[in-house]
Length: 106
Image 1 (tube, helix red, strand yellow):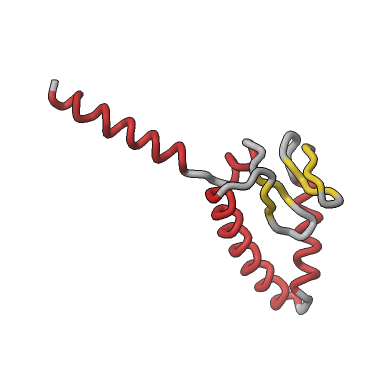
Image 2 (tube, rainbow, N blue to C red):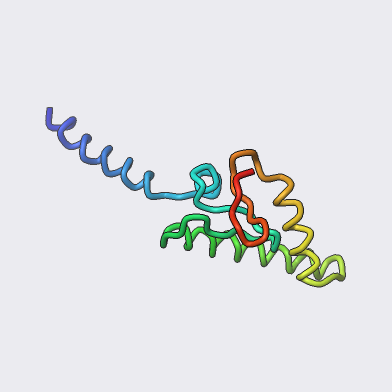
C-alpha cells in the first residue's frame, strides 16, 4: 500500500512536466506556431513557452542556413528565402503559414 501511495504523486508529477514540454510538432498541431516566408517560425499564439521554442528552433535554423550559404557561396538571405518557400510548401494541412503578414490555416 505504501508503494502505491508514493507512486501516485510521482506519476502525476511526471505527467504535469510532460504537459508543459512543448515540441515543434505539437506546437504546430495546436496552432501555436507557424511557418513564415523568411524561413523561420513565428508565433500564432504567443506565450513565454512558445517564444522560447521559437527562439531555440530559429537559432538552430539560422546556424544551418549560414552553413549552407557558406558552402554554396550564396548569401544568408538567399538561403532564408529558399527555406521559407520550401517550408510554406511543405506545411501540412491544418497548420498555420503567414501570408501577407496574416496567419492563415493551410
